[in-house]
Length: 536
Image 1: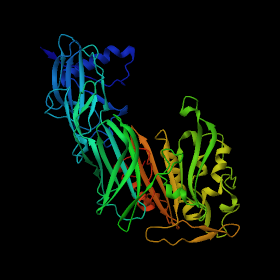
Image 2 (image 1 turned 45 degrees about the horizontal axis):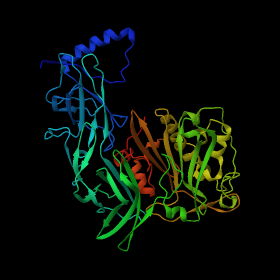
Image 3 (image 1 turned 90 degrees about the vertical axis):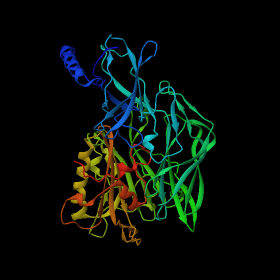
Image 4 (image 1 turned 90 degrees about the horizontal axis):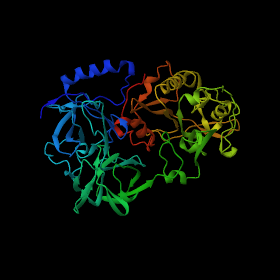
């Protein structure tokens, strides 16, 4: 059968009626040059996949072309490559072409490509070896059907046929987790997939799945075959010959296309592994992980303030819009962190700086510092963790930033009023480049090398811990991809205002502080947390 070329272009391309004929001519000219090409989305996220957040340079997919009537093979297992990693695929060796007679065809695409695949109804699956996960993370796209020369526009919409589990591991004692292993016993690991229907047929063979672990032992990943479970899914941890079984919340079935996140805090002392599960608390993208043992302490309080305004009924079920959350220590009378979203909704409005200094109504006055005026020690300002300038939508919302729980004793003229203020201004500017910027601002009274806490006093003479340093952990999505960056500035006087001297990665902040940032956002991977590039 003679064939001729036709370009597949993005569904999102907008062609005005008045220009349609001209655009079609351009397309037809491109067709003869390149053959059929494809753009792609994965799980409704432009140019993204769960393994590491984006297509990589030279990723290869396989494509089958079938006749629309009768489903006869027209072209089989043709490799296509995204040379720049942007999800735009062209033929690796040769390109497919539409039938010259104008007959309609269907496409079946899959990732990762294997030249051994001849039958799209029986793609072999073997998950026994997890060391190279991008070679077993099976995805398919079957949305392009009934295509011919008159309907060239098309975008491959990939979906995951398998499941994935991610373990976020953190040492609560500061000891190294390097060398830790994680595994799951008794799961089915082999089968076949019908790339057209997405149906997976598993064999009865079971095995132990060993998670792929990063070098520091802080994150483990495993690709899992969808299958029913008996009881809750359990994971075994092993470190220096000691083992610990942990129970996950996954029960009933491992679902196709699901991604499970399990945050595990590990206490390794005296040759024994104990875990500290994540506590149950209201949380959002910006909220760091809080463990059960942390909330069990009488001096640790998790506090959330709401704005008094509500989402529309068709958005988040009309729930009340949050202002900020914090993890507050009533002994030290400071918050370890304050977490909040930042976007135009919060910044622009009729509000102004209220200077409405007051006690936090969610906490007894006796558990807070009296900061009706500044600290008696003249060197310190009442330093906001959530800045007043980030909450100008209304006076009511701004007043909440002046609660004493949001304040810490911060060096004034050469920190709070200069370099730190410039960083806060920059953060507000960065929020304009995204729908929502997620911010965690913190104040740490100790460091890994200095556990001694120093104090000043409030207006009543009560002791208030002095932070040794301040930090910001930031996350935003730009062009469909998450970015992160961190800052750490000591509570000292600075001679200049270049806040980039405090540039760190979010991963480094996690190691410094012991907190896990953005734990409920699987798209913010370890590699993304390791980013250390100043934003513009």
